[in-house]
Image (cartoon, rainbow, N blue to C red; front, side):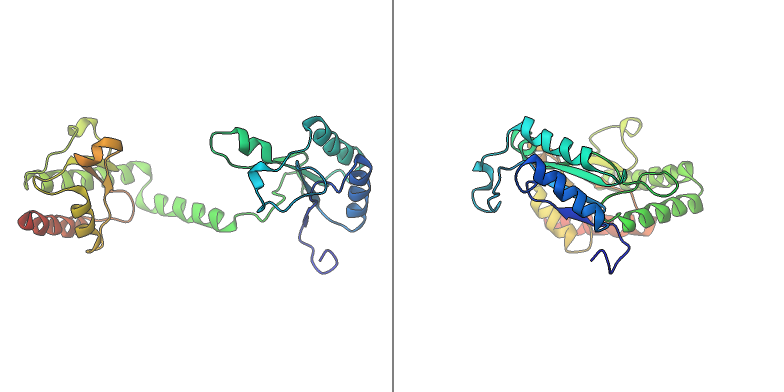
Length: 241
């Protein structure tokens, strides 16, 4: 792969294949092959497949694991070579139960700037650039805020005319997400499903409030004509209640 591509390659180095010496030898051989870096996991050697009682498998001693990472780092002759420590114990002890990756060294570019050692999220970069262009075309954040505020007020006024109250007064409400009392005789699942069937998605209240209120967002590519269609759907739901 290294011979066929100029892209940086990060090797899955398992647990380092045993002792400190094996890690040192691995790093030196990878450097000679032009590999960009290696990822080493904090499980005991020989490693057992993670799908076999993964959470119950014993982990390597922390000091020993850190020693392997340090041994690999000390063996480098190519400074940009990356060593990644994959720590499963963080996921076991953390509330989220997730794994995380710590980069010991970040591979650099010729101009000295850091770059990811994994595939860059190019689509996210393009999406951000396009979103900023759209914001500028609309007149900046002030114009965007004013449009959202007008849409939010259109929703509030339209629902108020149909007997559906806003939970908070206008000066205390967000322009992008606003909460309303459920219509009399209509529960949230019924309202949600009726609106979704016609192309609209609303949000339930948090926790126990889901039985009392719903929320409508006016953020995104939404316009006054969309709000008019939304209010027309509410008319049908209220008549059927």
